Image 1 (tube, one colour):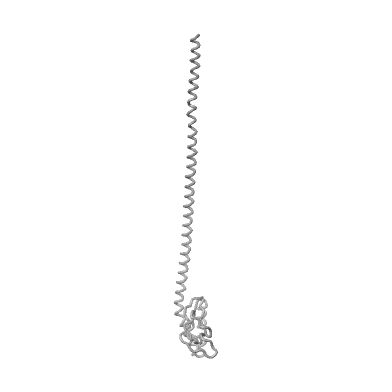
Image 2 (cartoon, rainbow, N blue to C red):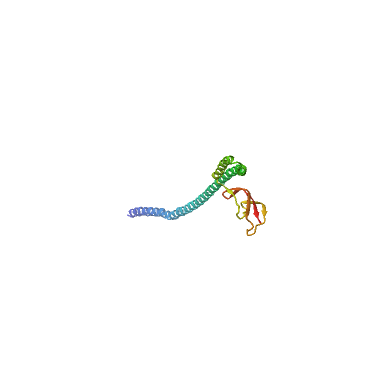
Length: 195
């Protein structure tokens, strides 16, 4: 009997050993919790890294947008300046041609003073065409007789003392009419001024 008792005791011991072996693998499972904490920490670090990259990309995008807007504005300014330069060059070229035509009008007006009636009609027709051409080009005469002298539009080539009751600084006589387009003087009027 004692043998029989030993056997079950040995048999009983085996299950106890198995339980101990089963209990041992359960203990290594506890260190698995810190392993789960690492992925969470890595996830947070990855999130921070992506967030930083996003902020960097946003800053670069804002920088590129700013540079693009500046370039677009610079190009627009360049285009406007270029357009204005071309326009001014065109108008200056026209003004140079017109400066050569002004004496033709002066001579026609002088001819009117000394010609006969038949010739006068022909000269008046030509003079009307001349004035129409100037009008179409937006050119105005500067004829400041009896007006206050304005050095912005007139050139005083003579002076005379003012008569009694007449204020000094007025245009007494116009020798040569001036011409202007808008505010730009193409030719100054040559005048006699009272002093």
